[in-house]
Image 1 (cartoon, rainbow, N blue to C red):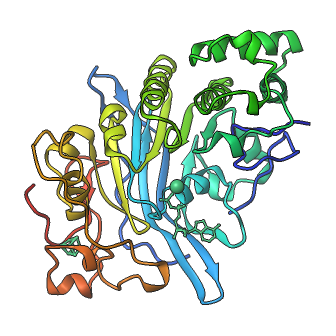
Image 2: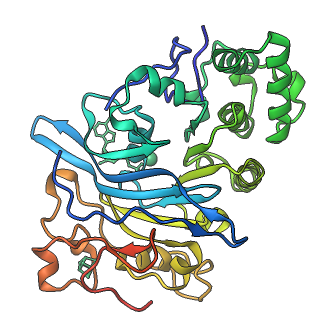
Length: 367
Ligand SMILES: Nc1ncnc2c1ncn2[C@@H]1O[C@H](COP(=O)(O)OP(=O)(O)O)[C@@H](O)[C@H]1O
Ligand code: SF4
Ligand SMILES: [Mg+2]
């Protein structure tokens, strides 16, 4: 049998989906987001709510949170971007939602991930498999390691469709070719019979997107889906993803370390640093009035998108290793505005009047 590339980070022989499975005390709990109105006045409601999620890695030196007290909502029909430097916990957050963590050594230790009234952190494996691909789908950064080299595009897609839908092989083929065409794969009927090594990187990523979308999921999680591609293909694929998201009224969690990507696609942004969300805001607010010194640092490294001509200034220093996390603010060793208390006290996420917005800082700065 073929694997399920929409849900499996590694090639596998189990089409029904090889899930790997799933606390420290939360320090703050934002209120559940009330319905919000989008720019068209349509009510927005959370499709997925992550609350006080802690995910830890076990090492010979002990267990360390690589995701710490993370809370956010993904609203209907919106693109939430999760942004931060490499190693900040973005992928682990996504794999926690999908229950695809490499357990051991990585496991959810506390918190809730609520989807359709159920907490995914303690849903039986059988029910999680039913949700994956069909209702929550994921695409990964590297389509080559996510596509099994021994199966054709068509074999994989047909298997995904027929596992979840009552479709004949001919119907599954028609569905596959149609979605491959929709995501911009050239000559989709011929490519249906291609093996992954016969496709370019951009084509493989379109196949991954098509496979992730073919069952019309409510949520798509895309983890750095264009990082491995050249800039032109990256822009085309992001445009395609955005168009599909809007057409399907789908919710999307897009993970990236690239603020230019965020500016082009996000409705709302959550900034992650060293395992924590340090700031959340609607995209316009985040770019025009970032409050957290880390967000400001990221934006200063991107002068064009901030709209202000600034010198390109990378943030000095590195994300601390998890064994050496400072006890107070995790950003203190790199922060130009650190106060004495920043070294001893841990800042809570201050949420303002608007749900889904706030920052974690004792000394926020004007930008
Ligand atoms: N399989 C694993 N075993 C041990 N540590 C891991 C594993 N996967 C990720 N980590 C650690 O978890 C942290 C967060 O990683 P990750 O979520 O991949 O970051 P990001 O996606 O933001 O680059 C990092 O410190 C990383 O080293
Ligand atoms: S809490 Fe202190 S160290 Fe942390 S980001 Fe704010 S000012 Fe900087
Ligand atoms: Mg990652």
